[in-house]
Amino acid sequence: MSRSEFAAEIYQYPEHLRDSLAQLPSSPGVYIFHGVSQQMPLYIGKSVNIRTRVMSHFRAKDEARMLRQTTHISFVETAGELGALLTEARMIKEQQPLFNKRLRRSKQLCSLHIQEGKVAVAYAKEIDFSSTPGLFGLFANRTVALEKLRQLADEQKLCYGVLGIEKLAKNRACFRYSLKRCAGACCGAESLEEHQQRLEASLASLRLHCWNWPGRIAIVEKGSSFTQYHIVQDWFYLGTVDSLQDEESLQKVSTYFDSDGYKILCKPLLDGRFETIQL
Image (cartoon, rainbow, N blue to C red):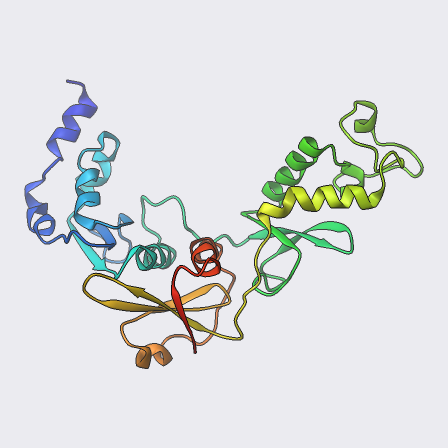
């Protein structure tokens, strides 16, 4: 047996965690691995079955380090998977667990913005992503956004110069046209209208949907034993309540555009998967 396998066996069922493990429910929700720090948990996760998911950590050989530091495990039950996803994302942003690498707020969050035929990188800190049309994709920073634009340009033979990625000499074709990597919008081989249509078609799957409601809404999620109301405005998750009478206690407006909230909420809201109540 290797050293890593031996470590995994040792920490499979630690004696000091048996009470925590015994209390875990087989229901949806969020679970938290706590260490000695009271301010920063070690790890926050979610599952439709908390007990099964937590137990799987003890069979993961590469998680022995985290398990060695765990002093106890707590959990928050939710009505269903949507509540678990929303609660996990919010808790990770607020508490910044040591072993979570994703779902952290990006201060440089940006998108590709098409306006009057031009493509530019737009930042969430400068414009409201929830209500601005013509936005495509959510990116951690400008570099990642431009890499995606170059990838699409290469796939569709779009012109770097017309897109604004590179400078374009007046009345001259770009260098990529001579290599047959550009269809020629830079020199008239194809029209700017055709180039624009191909650009928008290639970006279609990345289009950001504007918020469709005049204000906040409650998303009704019914579980096997209780119902929850997830309060959302401008794609921003404000919190969850067990009764709509309590929704006024939540913060009134969004404070920033939450890309994780948008990704979690967009599809289930737009396809009508859940009942919604306008507040």
